[in-house]
Image (cartoon, rainbow, N blue to C red; front, top):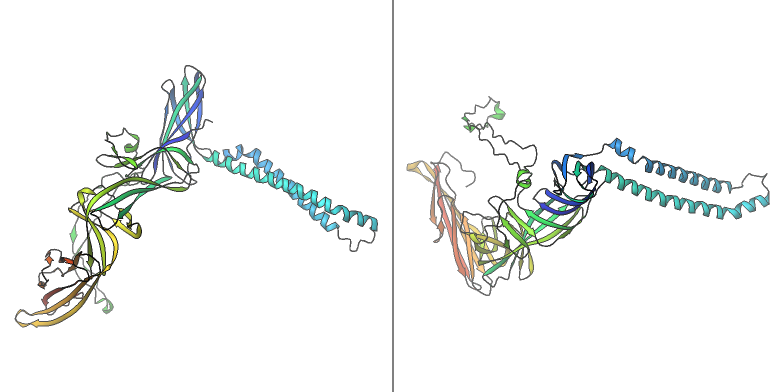
Length: 505
């Protein structure tokens, strides 16, 4: 059987396209060859439909198929080794029995017919006998260990599928071939490192990749390309079905169920997504799109309308069932440092680097490790909103900025002429900076948004903040000097029918 070696792998978020190269010796005329190399993890996945064989242009290939041996065939092939193992185990059992007999016979209690000379001779030779038996046992155990190892390796080898093909050539010689197939036993995922010193107006973003292959084979000297696509996700366009509304009529209940709410609800007939039977391979197996390469620090970056590709420089060693880390790109972006605090949710202030979305639009949604002046600050999730002009990269909690939020008023009264109840609320937000330089801070809070025309919400005092009536968000952009404190007031009132109750007010 002819071997092949992995030379190139195109790795996707899930799975990868593996290319192997080898040389096969052919005689003149047509012959059937067996090509080894479709390695996978135990219980792994190789898509037989994606296996392709390319041969030298002087060779004609036909009847290409992927073959897997049955367990019965494998047992038959391994029968000679199995018989050797069984024979050695029998020998070992006999030696153990002989050793036990020699030890048992050394006890002469109750054996009056045995002479003193015979007992002395037996005892004097016992050590040599047991030593010889032990040496034989040790030798047999080593032979068994080697045979069992050979058996396991041969079984793993035979369990791997292989390619069988009819090849024909005019002259005898060695001919190159290439095997390619889709394997589900490899994947990669991106992560970022964000580096800043908090003193300059720029930030450094490094894209790195964690890559793992779970096959039984070490990949040595392999060319790698990383794609952002995931072939495991169905490529079928979903179908939108009619969306009907109907009234819900609850069943009559006993007094225990008297509290059941009666309301009009929406009955969804369901949206059906048709799942493909196999990963969409046309993208990987078809002609490559025309792409322009841009050189970066760690890889050649390529892009088309739907996916991104990172071509790693040089060759790589990827051990089986191990993970490696690759550096892909490094970029700098101009930024503005400021703090953000949403005290209603969390009174901690977070340092952020505001960048232009256009400068970081290629960033993927994934985790990022944050480093400030070389110190590790923790993890943050990157998710760029392309609809906004700026994006804030979180740099972790800023311990030098303290914010408090307390309720200073909650008063309810009746509005007799309108038949309403009115609740007034007021909060005081205090921010203090302990930095030795000025601090730009954005405070964000909110006013409730009415979800019913009978509920009226009024912003009574927002201390000059920016108010979005659609979302209810109130924000203040303030500048604090060293050890400077600033207070903001957030006051609003809610009027609603007096016979109703708003539970979350």
